[in-house]
Length: 120
Image 1: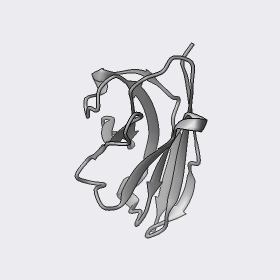
Image 2 (image 1 turned 90 degrees about the vertical axis):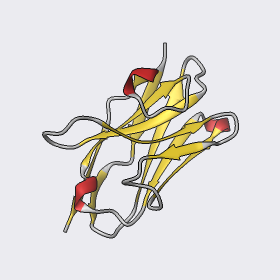
Image 3 (image 1 turned 180 degrees about the vertical axis):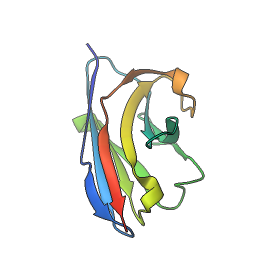
Image 4 (image 1 turned 180 degrees about the horizontal axis):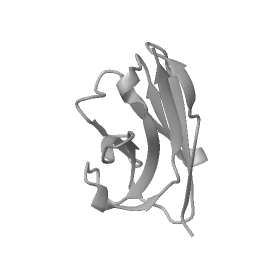
C-alpha cells in the first residue's frame, strides 16, 4: 500500500523559511509532486521532482523561492520554501505519479497534507 506522509508545516513569519518533508512508502513512483490549497481556492501545482535524476519543474509563483530535492535512500522528498509570503498560506500536499507534470490527474496517490501559515 502506498503511503505519503507530509511533515514540517507550521506558522512562519513573512520573509522566513520552512522545509516540508514527504516520506513515501510502498510502490515506487517516478515522480513526486507538491501541490497546495489555500482557503476558498482550488488546489494548485507547486512543483515536482523526478526520482531518477532530480529533474524539477516549478510553478511560476514559486520559482526562485522554493526548491524541491529528494533523498533516494530515505524515500523522502523535501520542499524548501524561502522568502515566504502571506499568499503562500495553504495546506501543502505531496503526491506520487508517473510523469513530471503540473496536472493533478497525473498523480495517483496523495498525502493528507500539512498546513503552512505565513503571518505578516
